[in-house]
Image 1 (tube, rainbow, N blue to C red):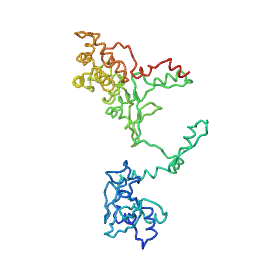
Image 2: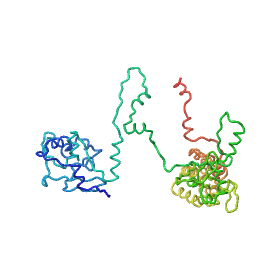
Image 3: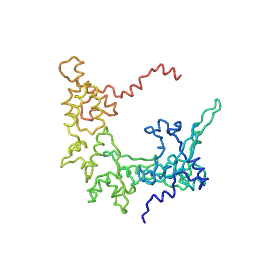
Image 4: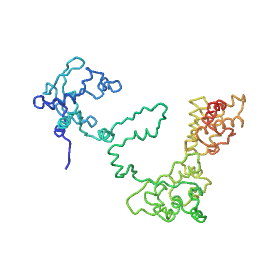
Length: 446
């Protein structure tokens, strides 16, 4: 049976009008005492809702007074516009004194309420109809927020402040959270589950041993398969596994930690496979990760480095052969575009260094040969020479190397550039932190 919230249903529960004083005197007294907002705008703008930080285009922060309607209107971001009759339409009013002036208050200033709750508790109880998912956040905020609590202590003179004790005493757990913990319900749940996959270069997997482990046990553990090597073996025997990338395997197979093998899932449950992030500074590991996400049916590290029947010496070369790296012309155009927007060569070197460290770059040797004059032009002017030479280029490489270190990168030779002099291997941040007066420091700590 379909259930819908109708205007008649809401009108029977929520009322935003002043009751008839003759028929319901007690409810009239409670509503006029507890359920009237302000009046604020135009009468008493010292109220909190009229502060500049809450006012909206000069209107009360709670949007009072409300417009008067003869019917309930649905909409308005999930909040209803309740029936509020104007005095000429049969609505009731009463007189109230504000700052020495007597004003007439009508239904436009009434906070929505439930007559039964007002009569039972004689208190301000705001009742609204949640007609949209947009209102749920507002409702659950107050359900789970708990009580406000403040800890105030005045320590005795000379008594040290015990921050740990103060923190423990100020902790508050509401009734909902207490019940949840007593019954040991789950605090957090991740769905679908995530399987963390091994990722390492050949013969560089991690093994953990105890001091009491015997030598034969250590040797046995070193020769055991991992998730990655077991995946290589799976591709040799299972036809379906040959159609999967390495991160897709946990969705269809389960890794047996005792037998160190992958076997097919027997249930409908699945898991997402995720390899850890790898920084471009670990060049070969970074490109190994890239190959595992772009190449199916690998039977080993050698097979991963083989592209179109050609065995490459490094994973980087294999990735380049698969056209997974950015085109050289793109980087050349980027450098030229930077030149067209700035004459500051140090800024050019800093931008290029960040490109090296944080981007998926291929071998930069060809790009360097074509653009090195642009990187070294300021060093040529400062040296007073007419032609570029190796020393000028080395000055530019030193500048790029320093910027790469500042970005957290390694040697620029790892990116295909010629090696720099390598005189200073610390970032500007570290050098600045070390540039303190040792004599003055000794005086302060002594």
